[in-house]
Image 1 (spheres, rainbow, N blue to C red):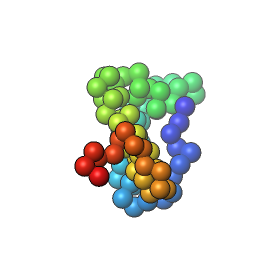
Image 2: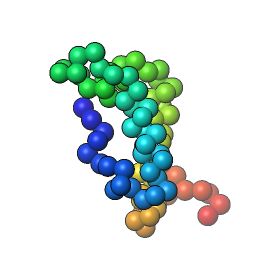
Image 3: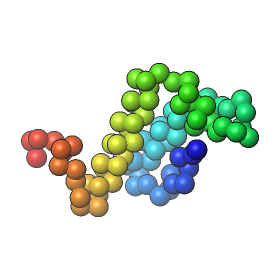
Image 4: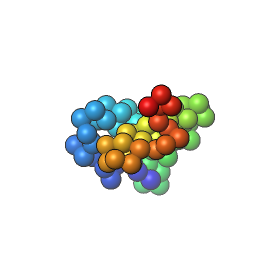
Length: 82
């Protein structure tokens, strides 16, 4: 299991920090059996639900910002004052 099909350079400059954060937090713990389980899976098995929620929110933030850039904003995620 991996999150690495995308590379940092493929993201707009404004989202690269978020991408780096997601990768770092999602692979924080190294696998003790790398031939059977990657760092992502090892990390997901060890983190608290609240940490997983933070990672998921950041992934959704990246997705939402990319949709905004593409011209397809997520209506329920937009600022209600817009």
